[in-house]
Length: 416
Image (cartoon, rainbow, N blue to C red; front, side):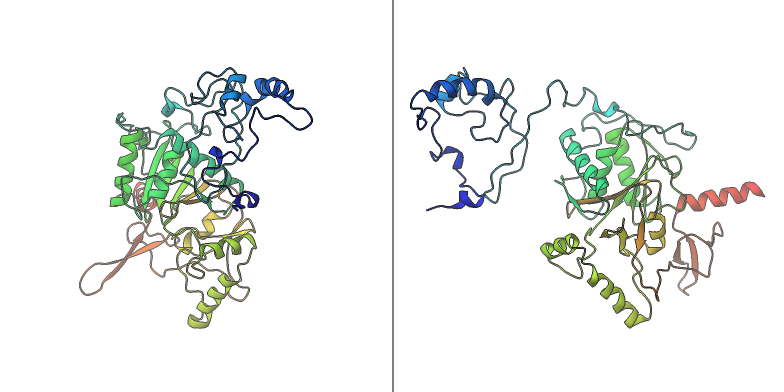
């Protein structure tokens, strides 16, 4: 005997089996008089039931006659909610009950969604260094993704913002570039991008690399938004492994491309175990890993993707940014969004949230320092890239953030 139903599971064909009482079957102690009661109740209540309840849209022929429905397999009408778009059912679990849409509240997208206002007032912008918006390619959806996918991602982002550092799964979509090139960050950018936004894309701090230029041109074509290389002028900044040196302000959103969102992945490969460790706040193994660095090298050797504690609750991977950028996450006025396309996970750090890098009392967290300065702007307090100039191994150091370096060099030139 199949007892799956008693355990909360159901047979794949449970809706079509005669394991329930028929609608026209007499009720004990009422006999056939119950049919009149059923007809009176169902005519006023069954139409309001949500899709996924016992009978669903169709129901038996007797029930259809009671509610004056001619075709038992007709599309839902009146107050019966249509079946939602969902993935193929798995695990043999029953569908969760779904509430019908609120009456009088429109839940459909407007005729021109790309003209919707952004989430906040962006204020006046200096357009001198902006690249003006180009004509959008109407062969694509606005920002490439369809509106249902954007809505799904935004719902995930709301949960991620409400629970800082918590990894929220989402249904990732295929993007016109392979995994590992920023598909997760692109999907988040597409979901939050508005027609009035100004987009900046950086790769390792540079605006002129292949990845940054390709993504910037992609959104300029599909969304028709203005783009810029100036950090203060941007409202949405998509980044690969760097945080700009220029301080961010409250009206900006940072979108990070994340290859591996799980900070415990190289310690515990099991996804089930890492989820349990996050739920129990069991992060002792992470401190053991940092201690192994101290025992081996005399200091914590992790130089990028340095784990952080968000809001005194979740340990988070800040993406492969250098640990030089970790202090910029703490109490930042900008909203930080992280997206992993391959792993289909997203998480967030809301503005003005406490973010602390893991360390020990006798080995406090430290950022990298350089004895050299930038060869272009002379900066001593920015993250520097090492360049090899010739076969003899001559070294030169320049700022990783090209916009920050160019602005400093311009200010020095004007001061002369």
